[in-house]
Length: 313
Image (cartoon, rainbow, N blue to C red; front, side):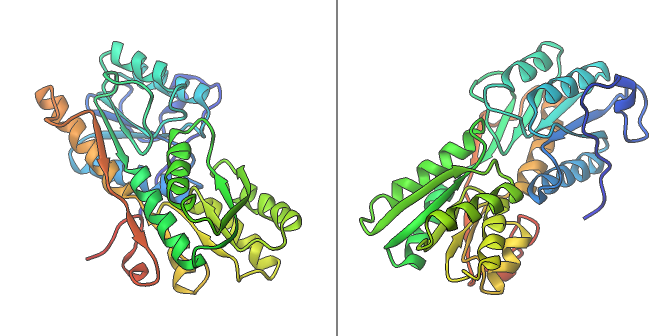
């Protein structure tokens, strides 16, 4: 995976935003904005979008909002100032991001969203997202199977401002709550963060030493929980993640984390660029705004086929 120059921006001049050798107002500029690349999921998105856009003849500018809606707003101002042709966005909040996308639209710049929806229709051209509810149900079914349908468990939830967090949690509970032998003893947000998940898992272990399972809203939190469990010599606890990252794949192959749910981040980002290209050339994508991509369960049977949020044939 090639290295991509990125920049997190708090309050700096528009001139300082250029991190690739492009003209001040490049005629074919696509701006790609995601959360931090410290999370391999978002790095994979940015990599895929960047490579696809360059392959199709566009200049690119890859930026990071760090899940900060104010930073995201500044990045949109920068994209508008640079007369970008299109914006590829994994947004910083389903409500907080509406105004930025609307502002770009008024400036004549179409936005193509990936991974996370906004709570509004008709502002973005495309919203290409994983079927988080379907994926969460796959993960919950595997969780019940490995837990044998009973035991005390904890849930680690993503950022409250992220609609995906609530959708995945609902998908989990619509399956798990049907099993009378399962008891939820702790539910807490770790904000998609591995360090936060580690600390929370340590606290959960102290309060509930009889914990038998953990289901996490993403792989990063699953990895944090698993690290805390291993440090406490509690590798008997069942852990399930969501995303399909290589770190969790390796843990599954080693007999650690039991399963994850693959959402096709790499392909979503490629599709967003392809649709942006078609829209810029024809004025339409030929597809509905909201587009769901089904997820795939990853466990020891198929983990070896997983690579960078995609399945090898």
